[in-house]
Amino acid sequence: MEFFNLLIIAIIQGLTEFLPVSSSGHLILFPLLSGEQDQGQAIDAAVHFGTLGAVTIYFWRDVRIALSGLVPLAMGRLDTPGARLALMLIVATIPAIAFGLVLKVTGLDDHLRSVAVIGWTMLIFGVVLYISDQLGKHQREAQDWSMKHAILIGLAQAIALIPGTSRSGITISAARMLGYKRQDAAKISMLMSIPVIIASTVLITGEILVNGETDLALDALIAAVLALVSALLAIKLMLSFLQKYSFTPYVIYRVALGLFLLWYAYF
Image 1 (cartoon, rainbow, N blue to C red):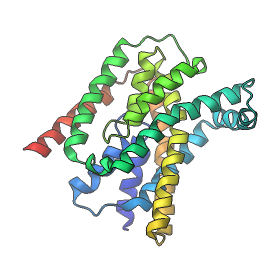
Image 2: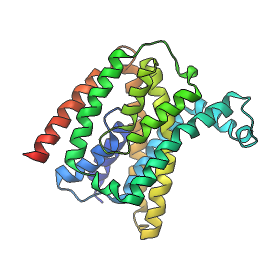
Image 3: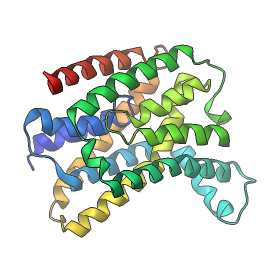
Image 4: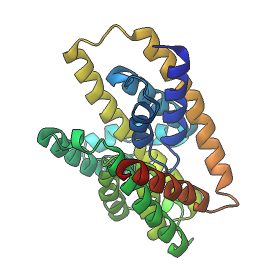
């Protein structure tokens, strides 16, 4: 695959995975609108792995705490902050895995990969993000995250399997409605992405091995590194941006793109 295309795909994934604008929607749109060949599962897995590396590096302190809690959690103990955080991350991931399996088994995942679907979800969930951001209070911080909220935000995260919804967008919307500050809602969303990205990467990698697509190792490595760098930049920029501003610019982008895609799909 040409380096320029790898660069574009890596930047798309790296920037949009954590911004509330839908990485999956943009990855699907790139070949559909540009006329370029679909990048394939191997490259998708690679750029997802790159963004996984980025969020792990950026939030290493929290990741280390969660990892330290896996052993106590396996022993049935919830007496450490790490065990509680690990359990909440696992619980928040279950709805997405269950819904993903339903989509995969029924074949609905392929039918949802259309410009029209992405246009509608961009528009609708852009409005949802705006409403939740405007109505949401600023009374909770990331350390206030509870099991109840993990379940609620996890249920919202499952909806993001519909292309164009945006995993970060819908989880941030849910967190804002629950009263989390903007930066803290974004942090919770990013931490929740870690087990989801691991699950999706494992699934895609399994399909690659089954289909014998193992001849793209160098392209995959390049794409992963580029995605890691762009994702680190995106995380830093968004958290800095949210210190002063709201999510409204992302909403404007989503609504504008959604309207364009609906025009493109129907007219």
